[in-house]
Image 1 (cartoon, rainbow, N blue to C red):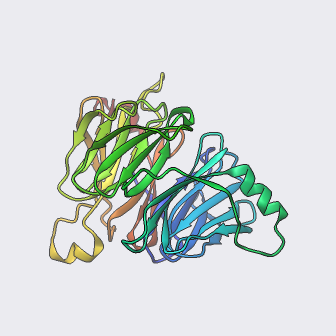
Image 2: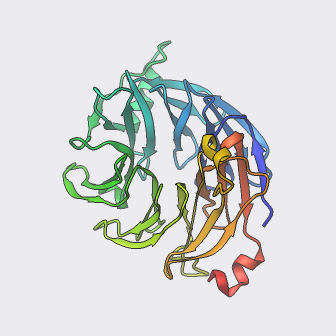
Length: 340
């Protein structure tokens, strides 16, 4: 498996998103730049300029609207075709840590992290149609005024909030290693569980919502999304920053019960150790074992983001130094019994 890489900046790539059809992918970095690339060739189609260092982004299923969240607190909206800026939301003394459209793109969830200890964490939900209506009605003002709903649990320091099965629940992760399950739209707490020793860097669901996987400094864990019961644990000696589950996890034809997880020693600490841990680990969830490991010898820093192609035939990384690498599985992955 030989990846090709793309690079649109020299700053760290913080997030990678592939569109619903799989023909485009988007990378966002600490310099506020968002780039759109062709999946097949790596050709850059365009770029978007956010209001600050981009931590998170998402796009609608029809690939018409892109939203990004910055560490300066702004949430920017762009028209994907043409790159037009449509407006932004602002938050005083807060970072936009996570943005995510609901399934069907009816709602948008935003996680705000405070810049000072005197301000609370906030998770808010907005109606996408109201956002679009305000964009159409506004004249010259860049800042959009949108009605939202606050769903922040008491004293929960949220790092990510994602929609559950059929938007009937919301799962939240915290800086203190907790997972929280809320009903929606009731916004009632169903279960709160301590699952990691420190911050949960990221979590993701399988395509059919049968499992949930987390990435943290003490490794990767698998849970039942309905109960938050731990099912599997892949322990690693270096921090894990990102995790992705194969879309073929429960496929009827050629199922691949795999996830990929990656991270590494932070760039500022790599000079102190020879073991950097920049590997990409391929794990079989059913048998709770690692079945493969990838390491690019040219890699210069940790992996911050992972995204599978919708067809499960490869994945994309987001790394330090502005690199994103596009991996496509070769015949060995499909024919070797080791990867079944």
